[in-house]
Length: 354
Image 1 (spheres, rainbow, N blue to C red):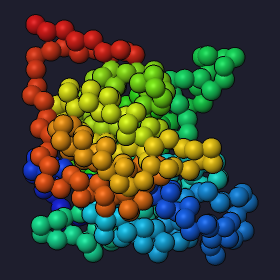
Image 2: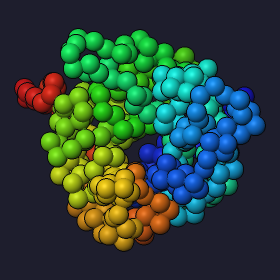
Image 3: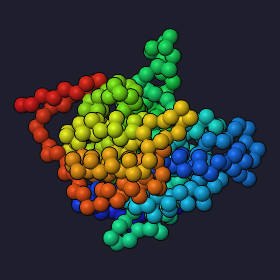
Image 4: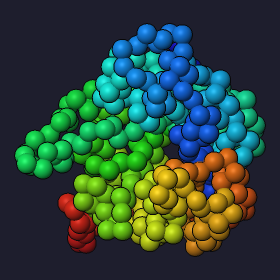
């Protein structure tokens, strides 16, 4: 049964024009704090599963739903306006690692339903809460070979990605998503397949939801893993007409700042950002505290870069509360006006005026 939100796309756009909205923080970081073991991931239903399941965080919406619901509630209590579903790796492609591709739709549906329940509990007329149904990048890349000795080899194709993303999108909407979010994009061809699938699903349903697109700059080169600059990445996907375009993951706010500024300077839609809590230390942990991270975010808000801001790896409800506090009352960035400029993009962007 479809559990659609009573909130409308217009409500989201109205709020984005008025104030900076707060996205939640890292789900994986919070799950790690519970120190779950193999039996926790398996639960009763998957007690005899043939592969190890520890680390399959998306499966927890089936085996530990109260834990996921509790994490959602913590982020909402901290001030989040938008909750991301616990479905980052829930496409049939990524779930194949656990021999669970056939469970993909169920996991996506339940992840959205849990986020929907939490948002409905916390929503008020003055502060509605939105569910962003997350479509992760998968663990395959359509434009780069995983074999250095065979540059032409691909371990996934466009049609396979479209099929996987279509299934997940249908399920996220059935579970109650208000928004579809393409997140942590490292390969633009994967993102194009995801966007094609999402728009195809909208056509099939006869209505559409706002789409958020968020890519990841992988290192100090300022490029995505598939080699595009921020500007080229934006122009490659601007035809989707998302409600927001943004960046997340890989870098802390200090290293991400110049790319946020670039995106803010060109984007004709709203801008979202959710950086990591710094770079991981030698133990794989994140050391940037909530207060220091919020100082960086406050500067971005004062510079007029932001419409949606939250946290990625290493962030917690403490980070989100601090971020929510520093952006409160700061003016929302206004999208750039459309121009009569012709844009092309490969690894670099090219514009031509007439």
